[in-house]
Length: 395
Ligand code: CMC
Image 1: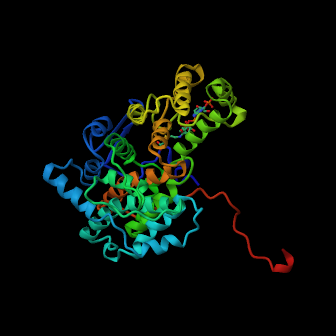
Image 2: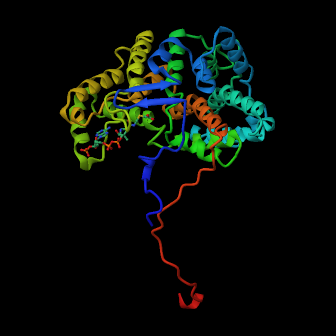
Image 3: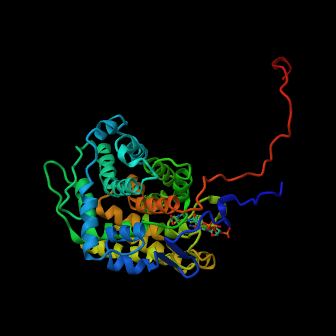
């Protein structure tokens, strides 16, 4: 009709004003509240980054201690949620379970549903950050048939998550600081990424005035898609497939397949819609990848060697160079998570855990924006013109 602008995929539409995250794809820059991701990943922990994303400033020492204590105080989930969990099939995908559990929080935490009450909003935000690791670990333990492990609040946020994942009632988890720091870094790098699909989903769901648990559950559901949160899972599967078909020797055959447009095969973990020179998160994750594999004595792990050879070949190959295709964060994060003992089907849950703070920071920013309206895209109608219903015998 000419009345509306047609913009599939929102390639050129800004849906909001935001002060939270800035990306410069050409320069390969990612900033949270003005701080470079390299700076944060090197000098801060995940909860400091959460504080920054939520409140706009880094905490001082007192604020950090208060915030850490507050979050860790809220790590337990309502005991009844275990019965809700048990309603799922054991072989359900953990993301299906997580979507249900997060949405289900609205049924347990009634005193955080009034979005017009700033205190209630804050309590719900803290609960979401605090309980997400517990819910993710519950979904994992359930899928492997082990009992749920309760949180330990004297541990750090990330160490506590690892003990909920890997301890059993028979054996305590021994905290390894190098590994905790690696996972903490994965959390920092995934905490926010401006108006990506899941964040836009949270804003759109939240714009109707629904409660934060429902809005975040919508974000979790969106993240599940392979074009978004599922990429690192796909990357690891690709590496495993090459490995199974002959490993390093077969890289050239694989690259040839990738270059053949009719094959439909892409080099997973390479390329990015926004970063066209390099993904700053990938550089940091690469560092972490080397640290973790060294710590665990896995430098000679065949899958890691395969990944590093593949990376080298692709970075020198004309096909990838001319199209500005570089490794993205997912190329390395899957290898790190695998080394940490996190199974592939849990990768997207880990992403959801980390992105929760981004989602709620963006949701809070929207709710408190005086210009905020319910999201209601229009369309260009291309269907039938007006017609009349014929009697059923004549259709
Ligand atoms: N392997 C082989 N060729 C590729 C790849 C790849 N991974 N990515 C892009 N290309 C080619 C593509 O075929 C096209 O070639 P041509 O110009 O000859 O037709 C050219 O490069 C441009 O590709 P595009 O599809 O227009 O680029 P895009 O910006 O739409 O896609 C992408 C970005 C991330 C979807 C894509 O690079 C891709 O599919 N990568 C693999 C999946 C992946 O690793 N995703 C994780 C992204 S990072 C996660 C996050 O930030 O949330």
